[in-house]
Amino acid sequence: MSEHTLPTDKATMETQIREALKVVRDPEIPVNVVDLGLIYDVDIEDDGTVNINMTLTSMGCPVQDMIQADAELAAMKVEGVRRVNVEFVWSPPWDTDKMSDDGKKQMRMFGFNL
Picture 1 (cartoon, rainbow, N blue to C red):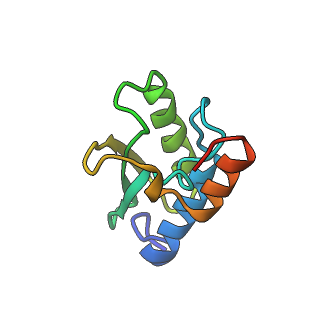
Picture 2: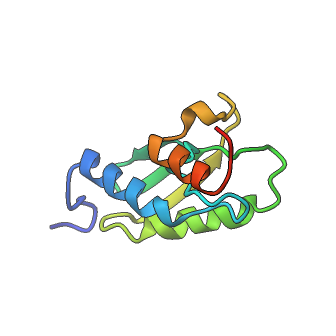
C-alpha cells in the first residue's frame, strides 16, 4: 500500500472517525460531541486529511480550544488519518433537535429536561 493510499473506503473511515470522536466531551455537558449533534460534517481527502466541521452549544464556549484539540487527537487515532482540521461553524445554529436519541437519553439521566 502506498503512503497516500487510504486503508479503507471513505464511508467506513468516516464511521470510524465519528466513533473515535465520541471520547470528546464538553466538560460542562455529560454527553459526547457526536451524540450532542455537534459534528456537522466529516470530509476525508484522498491524502488522509480529515476536515471536520462542528459547532458548539454556544458561541462563547470557554473550552473551545480544548474541544478542538481533543477532536483532532481523537480523529488522528483512526488508521489512515494523516492530518485533521477542525473548523467551528455557527450556521445552522445548534439546538437539541440535533442530538441523537442516545444523547437525549443521557441528558435526561443527568437531570436535563429535554
